[in-house]
Length: 424
Image 1 (cartoon, rainbow, N blue to C red):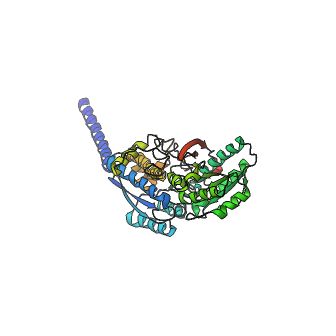
Image 2: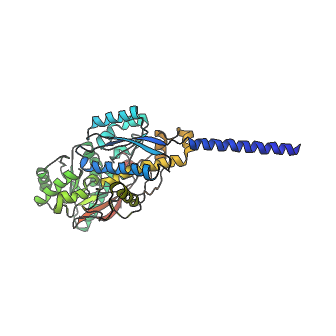
Image 3: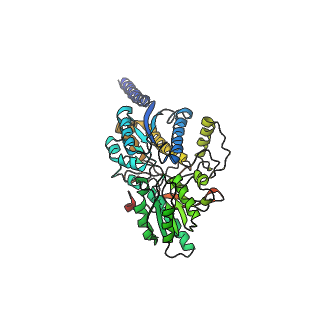
């Protein structure tokens, strides 16, 4: 009798194991072969000077994942639908609703501050993660923007880092009460970090001069720079894109300003060297990621893509006009990389995410993003940590300076992760 009992117990155990194994196999088979992703780019509007290469970086990374890597972990390909919206907020809103209702996208790779902030409530309601090229601090507080993400330091923390750097310069030079002016376009992108910057500038002991508004499409900025000159600014911060930054830098040189300029991430790239020429010498910029061609591990796949997709060899010097892509290419690549990392987490833990979130869904991607801790994107940006309470990926930026016609690294600066700076 004991013999038969033991035999039945053994058979029962084998049956249970088979059923469990079958369930695991079924779960593996349930991983979808593709996931639908939307893209909103500016390739024709006033920020297309940086938007074109951003779109190339995103598209190349998606193509690389699909064609070279065989999808996320060799299993899930990205079915990507995208369109140019010309930097028009109504166009972006209409495009988003089309992606949601017709294409049924699971996540979006987005673009500007005005359109991203305009869609914040909608993407939260629809539970569609939105990884933007806007690094506005308004998007990093999960209480207000629970489905908004980006992979590098916010505009506000970038600006704080530049102010901290300028303060150090002033102290070295014995300037006790340094003067600073903020120059920016009167659009949501331009205005986003200004209150935070001014508050921190006061804390550091800067005297703040009158704001100077220079449009993204400006062809000259002499009257604004005369205002900077009459104030006697030691430093000025520029918050436009490359084209308007070059206008400001050239006109400042022509007017003989001795003001030191710091430029935000979208106004400081290899095209500035071409557009501003010798006037760009000595200009500082904050860029919290690698430049195209920098010797970091993550550049290997980009070089592989350059060879495969464009038939070119990476035989250029980074930080010069020789580079095949400007710095915004990295930002497009990085936004896709952040999404890729979230999808990898889901695929690696598919049973858990299926039970909790129903597979690869918007809430699953959100949860995966919020589980990232100390992730190194292969040197392309500072280590990334995102939590359910704080979507600031990093508070570190790098300060560059143009020397002898080349963008060169000066230093790396981190600011505190203050609770009251979340969303500000």
